[in-house]
Image (cartoon, rainbow, N blue to C red):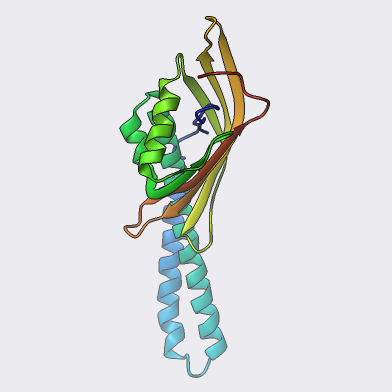
Length: 202
């Protein structure tokens, strides 16, 4: 995804799938039907405890599925927005995707922990002459608990060298996202590295 002071930092992606909304509505409808059935089951729960437990489990599973699907779409959307911010070299927008205590693990550099260190890292990256980045997201996952997720992909970053030529660096990245207290998702940890020894760039 992103490159470091000695390695490029990239960004990736696609946006929200338009087909998701109908599926989401269908699952929500199923949950509604199950909840109505649950009312009837609970009236006889003292006589059919196993049935009541089964209905409760099914309702819980369906609800978790709806939330997980929503979280996946949120991460896809945020990932795409971050890619756009990098392409536009908008430092302030880029920083908004990171938690206050986030860390970036760039190649051949110390860990950059905290917003100020991440600001310095990104300022350097965006300031590299001729910096241009493209990326592709390959995986988006969210934990069953719904508190952690990750996005993963590949990148190609082009920049100018001191002799007037250009170089392209290919690599991969992983961003670990954490759901915050207010329900928003922020990057907690991020790492990226090149597929081959990186070109020399200052």
